[in-house]
Amino acid sequence: MVCTCSVADIHAAFNTIVTRIQRFCNCNSQMPPPVKVAVAGDQSFLSTILRFFVEQLASKTPDWLNYIRFLIVPL
Figure (cartoon, rainbow, N blue to C red):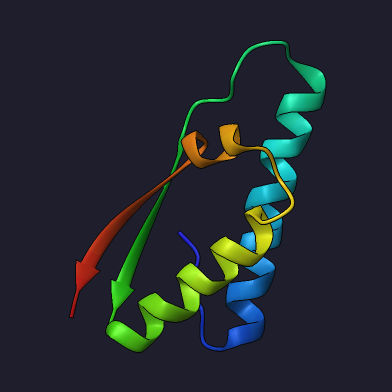
């Protein structure tokens, strides 16, 4: 569990997730299991999360869409 208080925290959390997936892909020939990311917050918080998701995956192959799953908890 990672609590985020700022946009910088969200950015750092996504960088960490993407780095770990990339490391797994570099060390294994199989697909990584999907990483489940639970997001609890209002619409603006969800929008911020998804913006970083799109930015991080813009330069990746379409396979990366299978590596991260979002679980949305509206507040």
